[in-house]
Length: 154
Image (cartoon, rainbow, N blue to C red):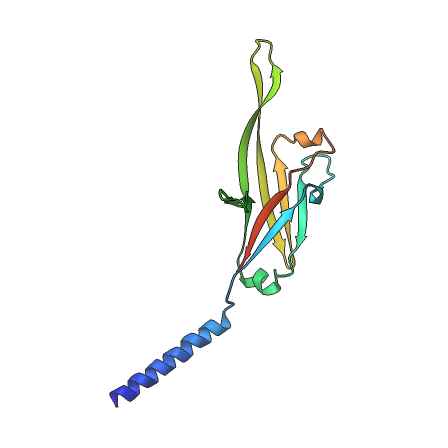
């Protein structure tokens, strides 16, 4: 009798756990997104311009939008041995020598930060790129470099 009760409890437990797993979405999708230099669009505001690229992602369904998880990473040297990734939003500070000297003969350095963020909708992802000094506004032909991103959908 004790074995029969144990068997019934075991079968009931399996049924409960398997039904829980059937109701929840299972799996994860990883999508590599390549944004070329030509893919970047620039806003046309009077101030605070930024670049953006919108990519169709049919795998980003209404179920994922409503109840899932979406993460994005910028990848560096993805196909090489020393690859790295940074989760978005991503901000990095830079400094560079302008090649110009001040009155005292010292090099003039410029400082800026690069900021990349994203937003998603059902079926698409938009990636935003801004540089803190907005120097790209001085050169209307400048655009961000080609970049690769890894989008994770759960």
